[in-house]
Image (cartoon, rainbow over all chains, first blue to last red; front, side, top):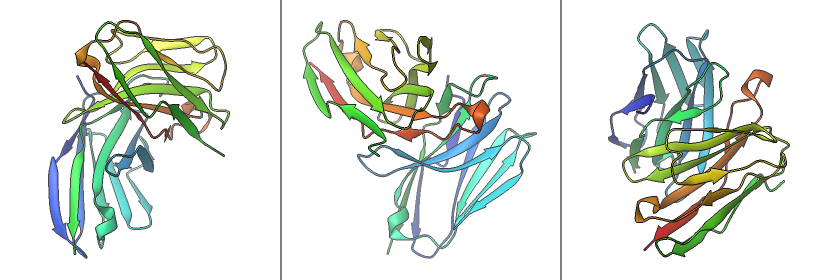
Length: 112
Length: 115
């Protein structure tokens, strides 16, 4: 079974709005990562948050991590049409931090 | 730098045929992995390796073999292709998590169809 599950499965917003995606996972982790995939392309790393961190920012991205609830959220502020993509969370499935397991993803559509 | 290079980009096989998907990275990464991506299923980990001579199974290893004879290369072998192996395959690499790594770099994928 997959470690991480994103919610919602799909999200449609207008340019300029904020987009929030959530990820829940099952077992304890060393870190949690978010990736983006444009249609037909490989995944691109967005941000990594370690288990002892609660919040991290990178440009228009804000990631939070709540290890007590085993959940994370990705906020994209002031969305642009170019943010249209699928977003995946990934968690390490073993103590060594290897074996990165992905969720099923959230498909974000940003219309202008 | 080329990053992670996967070949071929597209492949059509007949049931029962064997083939090898190639993956090479030029970033001196110890960690390499293979995923398959199916519609609505996200990415599922097939096999991974933390260094030359070391491989381990992921979530869906059946029907696939790997070996890691060099740091740069991590080929994925389909021994006897089945229609259920029709998918897009991604190779990824990173520095080891314990050495400040963990951020995966992905190849552009191989689209495989098994008839």
